[in-house]
Length: 207
Image 1 (spheres, rainbow, N blue to C red):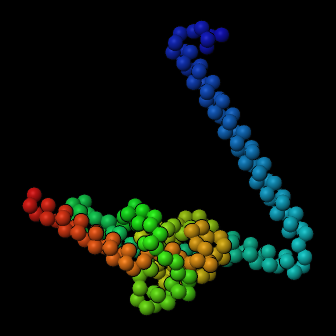
Image 2 (cartoon, helix red, strand yellow; image 1 turned 90 degrees about the vertical axis):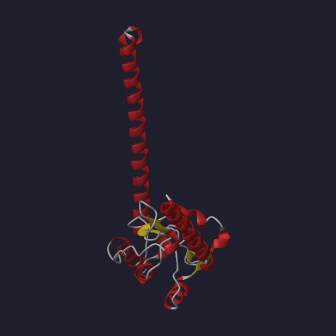
Image 3 (cartoon, rainbow, N blue to C red; image 1 turned 120 degrees about the horizontal axis):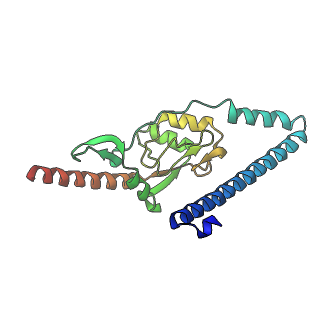
């Protein structure tokens, strides 16, 4: 009754506590539901494993090891293509940072992109081409990107991808391959970046 008839500050406090308790109860309910779902999934997997034949079980165990134990070492970050390099504070020189925003939106136009399967990517790189990712590529596990828009695909990254079960990699379909920028799109982007840099430098010199 005090919460309904007391001073305004006290009524507001009681209302806040009540809303907090409701929010907490909702969070707890969602957690319980999530745990229940995970338990059901685990039980379903256990049942399938128990029903496996003597031929299927080693295949399952090998796949399990490949996802949990026998993981290839993560590749180091390569670099951003020069068309997407960041700028210093005065915008007069490039840095190693990347302008992922420009790279991301460049990929919205399908005409700026093409697909190369792993073997084609390998051959293109050996031929001197810089293959630049047009989207995020995220293996699970570990669940964070090994490629981001605007990043150059390195030999180390390609080797990592070849060693992984590609069905577990978000942003990569083995039948299509890597989604990369066309050489013409990279050239246009690099030219636009150079023009912008020249304008900034001219303004700085006349400023």
